[in-house]
Length: 118
Image (cartoon, rainbow, N blue to C red; front, side, top):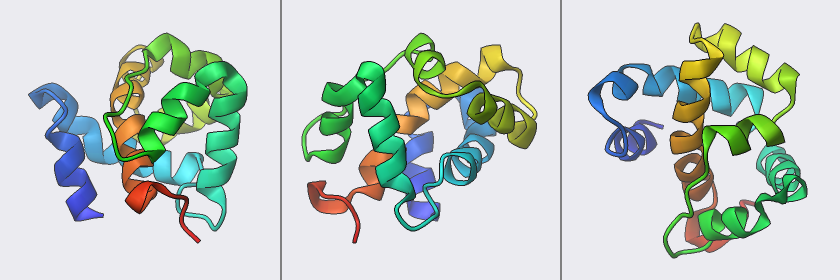
């Protein structure tokens, strides 16, 4: 977990870094990345929301395609967004851009070697 946080915070500016761990933990909990099969459900949701090419870039070994806060909001359910707001204490306007930066790296780190975990 700490290794992934180091990678994630390297992608963020100093204000974002202050909230990175909370957002990372919220992503882990709310989106099910800590649960068995949780990453598969999230990736199915993202792919179904039109982000299949992005998802494939995050899973693969190449560069991660970026996403926008608007894409995050379109793909995640209102319940998921509100749960992350409650978990982090950040307003939606601050949370979604941070999720857009953290999510590709979180998925990339959760799919080592370019494949889904067993």
